[in-house]
Length: 358
Image (tube, rainbow, N blue to C red; front, side):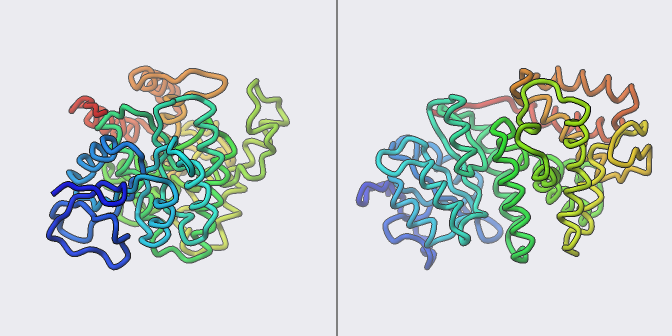
């Protein structure tokens, strides 16, 4: 039965409530083979909350809805959800402020937060990056895209669950490094999800797939040593600036090397800018000397860079990006087998076609 409790739209079910759930917000979920991921939605428009909840319930997720920022913040701290979806423009304490406070609290800093807004402006995206949002998308939202992004965020959360405190610090640091450049917003989450799936497609061992998902998050952590004047430069880099930029791969390996849990991740961090013909960096490795996991991540990394807007370039369509990468494969840069598996995976993803919801 659908009803309203203190401004919060809820759907009562016969399922028991979690002891950590807010008593004013009843969860919605469907049957699943195990514990459902818990998602918190905060939006002051009941129709938007209802639309989001319908989509998420179909995925077997447990949903709690709140209608304002303060309630969302209190509920997130109490229930520690696996994902938070926030309306950017709620009155009073808006989604950006809720996100900032969640990311400033060690108990909630690693919970993925997605900002949803009706204004797809550069200023809003910059603001989202500044407060630590993990992803950002606009209304009306595309169901296929929303589903993919939610699943990517939940996979990201599964990576951080159970981490040692020192490991979690590195993941948080990687997010901070990514947040320095608003143009790369969401890059780490996308790479983590796509690289893990590509590892499955390539039938890599389970530990290699796990390493790829982790590396997707921390592969550029070494950019912390690159000054903003170089990292954010809109024009071409000088020779000395390129030396600084290219130092990030080895620096990232050094930062992560003290942790034994990152042993399988270190070669990916160090070698994700090598090229099959030996023209990459930092070590000029060639062919099979480049770990297969690094070859997988670099293909995903290049694709994401090509299809995202940067201050110095427009975003390419998927076919345009594949055309560019195919020419680079023929030049001897990327592994043709890995590239072929990746293009097949992406094309299969697109076969269902987009669906939209208001």
